[in-house]
Amino acid sequence: MSDRRIQVFHAVARLLSFTKAAEALNMTQPAVTFQIRQLEEDFNTRLFDRGHNRISLTEAGQRVFEFSARIIALYEEMEESVRELTGEITGALTVGASTTIAEYLLPSLLGSFKERYPEMNIRLTVTNTEGVVHLVEENEIDLGVVEGGVSNKQLLVETCLIDELVVIAPPAHEFAAYTSITTEQLIGQPFVFREAGSGTREVVANFFAAQGLSERDLNKSLELGSPEAIKGAVEAGMGVSIVSHAIIGKELKLGTLLARSLEPPLPRPFSFVRQRQKFRHGVMEEFLEFARHYCQAQERASASR
Image 1 (cartoon, rainbow, N blue to C red):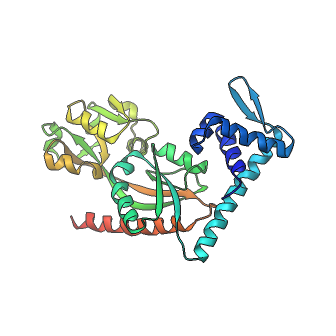
Image 2 (tube, rainbow, N blue to C red; image 1 turned 90 degrees about the vertical axis):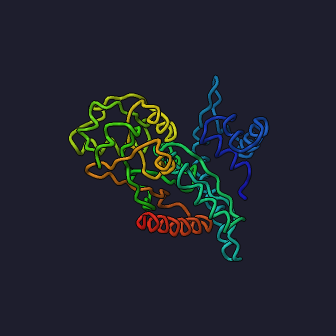
Image 3 (cartoon, one colour; image 1 turned 120 degrees about the horizontal axis):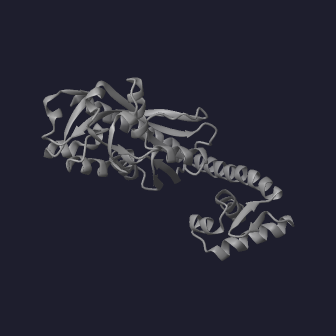
């Protein structure tokens, strides 16, 4: 484990907050302050300028911040290298997932993985696709699992599954008379949107743009932050929406929603996202390999239905 003072300093410098760093490290704020003071005494210089309710890095602090990230990464690489040499694959993996994936894909995947590798720990952060990509970019998580495209070409993106987005409506809706729905048929319908930053929202916007339309052409009824909220609003007759087919199995069986394919169809990938240059430790390799086989099994099961 790398020098605790370096870890504490890196957290404070990254978050620019002693309070947030203490929460992230599960430490008290006085303990964080003590570690920083010790480091400043070692360097015989201030690493932070402390103003009114805010802190910022000094020139020396910025230099230490750059080195601290490299030191922490090297320690992690060294520890993992030794574990692999001794045949021991243990440790933790921090995963970030968009809401749809976290609620409907990952529970089964993580449960199966933990059953096979009980000694490995997975820490999960749930936010929308935009938030997950940001966490990967900032090296705050090891691996992201997102829906839709990723524009940052510096990240490594690997497709796991191909999902299909479909139109959902209440069972008695006029769409029940159709086998598929066009974008023109959606114009004028009260429409329930996902929040900005959602992968589903972005894919739907791009789909409409390809048809020469935009979100402004839709009659926005609501904007909600989760798939469950979207389904509930549609069931209550507050509008129609476009969601992943993977999230509506229960509702289709119960008959509380109807689903219709879009015309043309709207597929989108579920993808793993990680940094290209990040050291890929044993836990990451094991999880990715396990997840690939899991996704292949899911696709085979879907194709056989």
